[in-house]
Length: 182
Image (cartoon, rainbow, N blue to C red; front, top):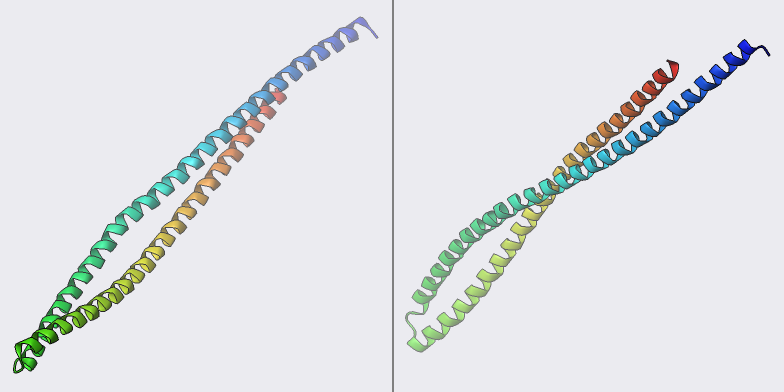
């Protein structure tokens, strides 16, 4: 081998060694950047999930007072109707037994009041349970639709995050390729 060829071989070996060092540095940089991107995406996902949970809690907090107000309004209407019926029933009973003795009157009124109160309580409880069941079903439906929207948005965020990672890796690969081709 001639000294010129030997010199050329040494120069090529030195260039290859430099390229190898640069490639190792670049690979290390790419790996570090990849890890940083993965951590950033994970943080973004956790934040999105936390925000979705907060939104669900706020929705629940907003719906519950409205539900209570609606139930209370309907119960008030029922109480008023029951009081009117109770009053009417008392008046009818009073008129009917007004001709009888005072002792009998008092016993019958007391018995009638107790029976009316039992019926009023039973009807009120029945209506209240029906109203609550209806409202619970409505709330469950609303929460389910909010969950579906949140899940859809979360899927979109995940897709964007994965696309970002893919683009970042592709850009790094392109940078490595451009660097190596120099």
